[in-house]
Structures are given as structure tokens and as C-alpha cells.
Image (tube, rainbow, N blue to C red; front, side, top):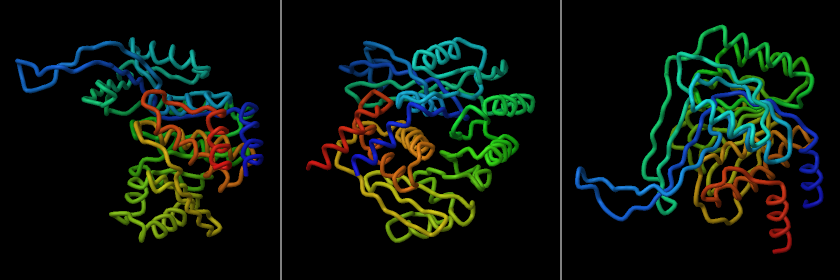
Length: 327
């Protein structure tokens, strides 16, 4: 297994992926807590440092870039300082930002997390819920058309914030079908029917439950959930299931349950972004669906063991495989 996995990952650096979706700026305020405020019964955080990272769909692009591949980011930001910071953070990570469009009437989506002793105490969100004008959808389609020949695949990273609309999704799927490019989606249940006929979707078990209409997903229902989504959307489905690993449901009827490997879980933020990035790169690099699922399962295990860093490297994945093969 090791040699096959390594040969697939060695192809990553030759690939280019277009990521489209809701981009965000993640800001982290790291501090210490030693007292309660005299003004209200809340903890007082003494800020020690701040850090920034691409969030949302831009974290998917960050994961793709960290794996050595080329990546184009397509999304919408406001005309503000948060946009400037986000673009700077993306460029510093090797992400092409030509596809970032500006909507002056909406803020750049920003999530501020306040942490102490590696525990998240509070999150503050900045975002508009008004959606984006039609002309931006046309500009997105034009950008995709301009890059379709030089990319190997598309990731739709849908956080249901307005970038992925019916017309945008239809254009991506149609264009990629014409050019034989792989499309993988990290979905949101409210947009389920937009993802028909893509190559694969990667919902977590809560999202899969909602998408299928089968609530309270458990070991007895997982096969029914996967089969229902696969049939509804005519796509392969990779359901991430936390400590239970992943379950892959193929259009041809194949079902594979992949157990997770033992790792301490410190931070689940962005685990889904890691999965969709790794799975897509594996598929465009010649991996089978099962091989792509296995590699992304390993990457997710590494990701959740990290407190701060949002990405996983090929070297980390290879070392992980080596460790468990020699165990």
C-alpha cells in the first residue's frame, strides 16, 4: 500500500486545482485567563498574540497549496482591510488570487476566535446575509472559462454564504463535464440539489443525515444514508464520521467503511477542508475512489491532532503511512 500511496502523492505537485466558494478571514487571538471581570461574570483574556489564516473556502485552497499543487481561488470579498489581510495571507501561501471578486456593499467574511490554553472561549463573526448581485455570478463563470484548460479539477467549497448559486453550480458542472475535469464538492445541505452529477461530495455525518432526510444517523443507518444521497445526486459520496473514520459510497454500488487511526483530537476546525483538498488531488492524480478516501482519512487524522496549524503536508502523510505499516 505504501508505494502506491506515495506514487499518487508524488503527482500532486504536477496538478492545478480551482477552488470556488465562500472565502473568509480567520483571526485568532491567543491569550491567558487568570481572573473574572468585575463588570460582568465573564473571563478576562489577556491577549498575548494574534494570528491570521485563510478560512472557509480559502482554507481549502490553503490545503491544496500546502500539498504542493497549484491553486486558483475564486470567491467574493468586501472592499475593506480584512480583504487586504486575507489576500496577503493567501498570496504568502502560494495561492493565486486573480479570481477574488469585490463586492463593495458586503464585508469580507471574518471569524475571530479567542483562545486561552488551547481552548476556544468565544467566536465573533462578521458577514452579510444579503447575497451577491448577478453580475458577480457572470464574472465567476467568465473566470472559470478562462482557466478551465489549465486546471485538472475543481473543488466547490460551499459554506452557503452566497457564492455557490444554482447558475454558478450548473455552469461549473457543465463546463467541467465538457472538458473532462473532476468536480468534488464540500457541501451544505440547503444546496443539496445543486450537486447532481459531480464526481464526489464529502459531507460530514451530520450534513449527510440532513441531506438524506434520515435523521439521527448511526451505525444502523449509515448505509441507507449513503445510498440515498448517491442515488439522489448520481454521485459518489464520502461521508466523514469523526472517530468512526469515513464511509465511501460509490455510484456502482460499492461501499467501503474506513476506520480512523489513533490520534489525539485537539482541533476539528478545518478537517473537512483537508479531506476535500486531499481527496480531489488524489483523484486527479490517478487514485481510485477508495485510494482517495484512504489518503484523505489519514490526512484528516493528522489535521485534528494539531492545535493551530490548519494544513497537512505530504511528508506528514507519508510518515504516518510508514508508521502504521511498520506497527
